[in-house]
Length: 397
Image 1 (spheres, rainbow, N blue to C red):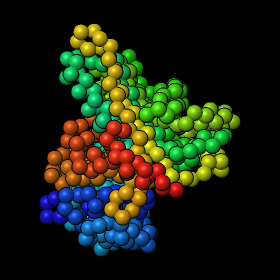
Image 2: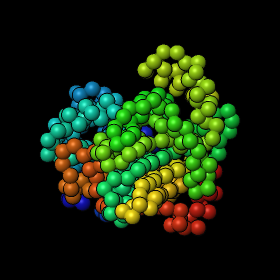
Image 3: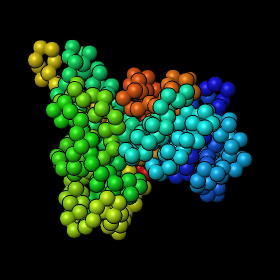
Image 4: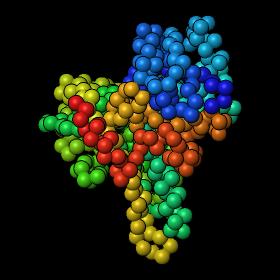
């Protein structure tokens, strides 16, 4: 890293702490980290947690990041020295954080799947000198770069310019699930409710389209585990725009255990209203019936299928089953590592000034990203898993 530039993390939740620890532990050189939050005590708690969890001598500081855009002088001094701002705040804060990065000439990364805010940030950052990398988490994020890379490889290997289908599937689940919901929360309930009720953007017949969420339920086996998939919003990132005309069908679906989507359908059948009102009511019902569970697993599946230049029908697939993983002295949940590793990898690339302006997921180099040190530590295909590590993680309560 160039002169150990400051990396600012906005937010003090589970993803922010995981991102900080991953950067502290796995960066080529120990960085200087700043944790900003509207509640200073929470930022201090995360900063101390990262320092305690790292096996390296790292600088981690906390500062007050207030709501609104009236920042104290201490924060302004930190912004002036900042190299990269990673936005781990709720999606609605993305435009505010992007304006901050633009004003202080910092690279900017966010993880939100919110389409409206993504479009607003894209407009703000058009022509910016520094990079504004959007939707760089797990889904959208890693799954889109993986699928895009597989599409490129398929076309080169089989000497074609178009394919029939690209499938992207991700499920952040508990290791066990009981009736009636067959689900446990491992991340934001409002995020789950939103993706179930906002339109899904897909490609159908080579054209980008908006389709109703939860309208194409199917079964899928991933590493021998039977799951259900259905359309949800946000996960496709900008691939429908980038690949329309080159792929006949493209979609992102969320994976759940069988029985969950039927339970959700039953809830939605009796929920009135629309928009935010409906999202809020679904969230309320889920929180009343579904527990939060720490012991988690993340399933990922991506596939590209089509005919090669000789007319043979082919499908190429990749699947991952990510369990909790040790980073330094801390055992991180699967949702933490899989969501925080992608933006951490992007941070390393931005510190080499590899991008500028608005950077959507289709613009990230799959080769460099997927072979990056941090990403490869987390996303390993089943055959790469070390037996002794699997046993160790399986023993985690």
